[in-house]
Each structure stands twice: as C-alpha cells, then as structure tokens.
Image (tube, rainbow, N blue to C red):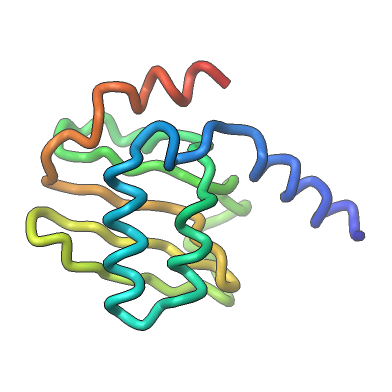
Length: 122
C-alpha cells in the first residue's frame, strides 16, 4: 500500500463513528441515498467517521468533515456533490472518488448538541 493511502486510512479511522454520535442522521443518510439510487454511498454512510466540524461558525451550519481535506480548494478531479432532500434544510455530500468526505447540514434542526464535544474528544 502506498504511504499516502496508508496515511488516508489512518486519518479516516481517527474519529468517532457518525452512527454512534448521530444515529438518526446516519439512518436518514442511508435512506435518502438508497432512494437516490446511490447504493454504494449508502453503504459508506454507515461507516463515516466524524473528523472535524465545519469552521465557518455560522449558527445555521452543522456541517462536518469525514476525511481530511486535500491541499488546495476545491476538491479537484473525482469530486461530485450529491444533494439530498431531507424535507427541511439542506443535506449535501461532497464525494471524492466514491468516498463521502464532507457532510453539509444547513438550516436544519440541531442534529445533537454533541458535535463539538465529539470532535474535541479525539
């Protein structure tokens, strides 16, 4: 395995499982992805790790990273955005090479008061 791949795997495993912190959100992600025909992403959604919260500090944002952001912005080749319809607010996923790297939660009821605490426990 290449060093970069080993490093990415280590980073991806360094955080609590989203399903443990936000079980209802994980269930919703899986359900919405299945409904969109995104079966591979639905499987991936069950094993997402909470790596870092969004640093925008806006009250309406509960977004978080599930993988380290590559240098530069935007994500580059292999990136696509998957917009889901949760019925309230916005739920968008940044996907790079078939991997969910960022979950955007905007204008939604609080997922849980534990986002910051879960990220800081790492």
